[in-house]
Length: 371
Length: 218
Image (cartoon, rainbow over all chains, first blue to last red; front, side, top):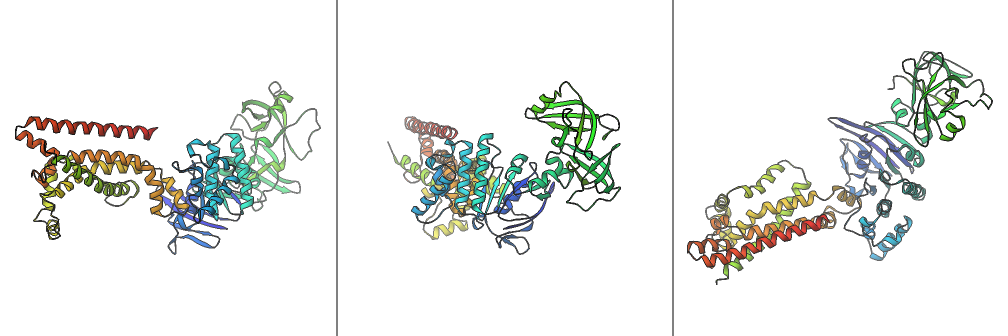
């Protein structure tokens, strides 16, 4: 278990966070410059914050109050920085053996065991520059894990790799996490990677933790508008709570009334409360004329497609309502995302007027003023 | 032909380079890797021999190490006086070539990614082990180039050596001083031979440094 408390102020930046991590993979997610790498470096003992505490399995690594600050050598952390930092003048074997002590037969056994685990046993004699990016990352992982660390710190480990290699290494890291049973801090700014790998995601923005929770929670119940933006919520609509009845919440958004579910993460919102309604673009359905209409309790809205963007694997449609609007000050009301085959099948390029359906449980509410 | 100046110069330059290797690595590492008050001042002090006239440098050394100074008196008491001995020539050559060595070492250490050292620390290796197994092996080529330059500079020192060690044939007369001496004595043949040898050595040195530099890039 890793207990972490950091506070440090620069002239133009303030880092302050508190986090407790069990034997899980926690993703530090945020833009570059949000303080993710600094957090890792604090745990490794490579950065000393003005205030804070780092306690690993009950062992105090750093405590600004009592003045304890163990050097990196004494911390037992496995650290893989961005760019891997393999020692260029040493072979793969020597890199992995670098942190090991003891009889050489024992070192040889442990190095080969780790090279085998990361699938590089036959490349032990190579130099780092003779390896591909994915192989270099495997060596860096083996080197960090060979010392049997109490925590593993991975700084953007996969961001420089091509998609197939990245996917292989994601599987490797997930498997290692299950076998090792130690806390892993994994820094990334890639949302899909965060969701795929994380037991919990910690969202960082400008040096502060905005939300910590399982991927589903962060994706579907962002606690703040910044989190909603970071996790790719493209519809953020201002509104007001009208009231709560057994069917759910009644919301006024623009000139329309919509139904929503209460946010399980915040206290019930009273009537009159100002809210931001988050609706993921891919959660808005286009009602097909050849299928029965969805149940009445869904929000059914008529309108037309006034613009679109082709992302290749998905189409974004900009949808403007007929009659009362959700966002009267903008030319479209909601952004909808559909896969290309739906786009083709429904002929969305020709037929522009449609009814859309938004399930109440797809509308997530954030109390306004948390911005 | 009197070979003494060759032997003396080789000995002086070798010893001066040896001293500079240790001092240059230490100061170059401090300048590259540590921030402390007075770092820029230290950088300036070790560079100053490059911009001062050699006679000024020699004068300073003469005052600092001469019979009247505490250092000079202490050395005399120990039986190793510096001024007007070949040891004085070593000190003069070392000080005047130190800037080249320090600058090379500083550049060499700055060229080593600090992240490599940091990772080495997290892997449990002591500061000295990190320096010995990571920093130095990755920096040694540039340091070697600095050593060669520094050796050539030490070999060719004239002004500072003349001020500190004097011009005593058979005792403190180095190659560079022997050239001056030969010209003064109107022995232009001897001067020509010495100049040719010194020039060839200088060119070979620079060729070697460039080759080291190229292998570094490759």
